[in-house]
Length: 207
Image (cartoon, rainbow, N blue to C red; front, side, top):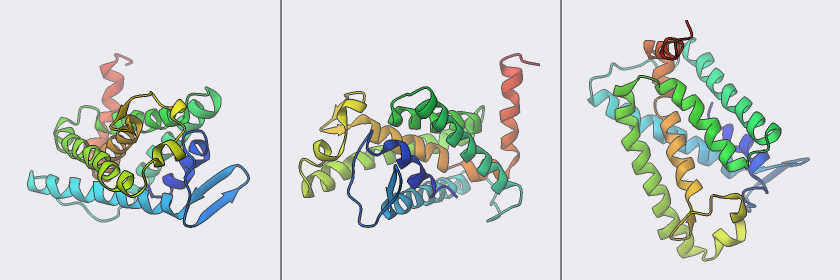
């Protein structure tokens, strides 16, 4: 379900944030993406969920069913919220697309993790390590094989301007937030943990 987000977000990111070359390039009017977008998002979502569930089971969490009729619509609702936020922030409010994307992931993530401290204590370190590994893969692999790639593909004027050994910090922030959302979202949507979202109204004294 999350894999489709990769091609979708390229509607805003290309060429505003970057202009990559694809092995299989697909385009429809002003929307451009590649098969790599689908595969990368598919892999990150699957790895995130697998790592999170592996640690969660060791921490005493119960096993979850593979698919439930309640979980899938809930996950779809969070994805739809992220898409709505992307449209609002990037297309309506004209926020820089990569920063709109970060907010479009952070806000649904904040909702699913609200007061879920035990889950957050598991997924936060995983997301931190993944962000670090994502940075190292650029340094040790991508820039070694393709020096100058960042300057050639990325629109660095559309970033914060913070570079970590030549890598825009947005890349690591995206990896971190993606794992923070994708790791626990299925478990939370399957379980009663989703009820924590309703506590937001009490937290802000809206009732």
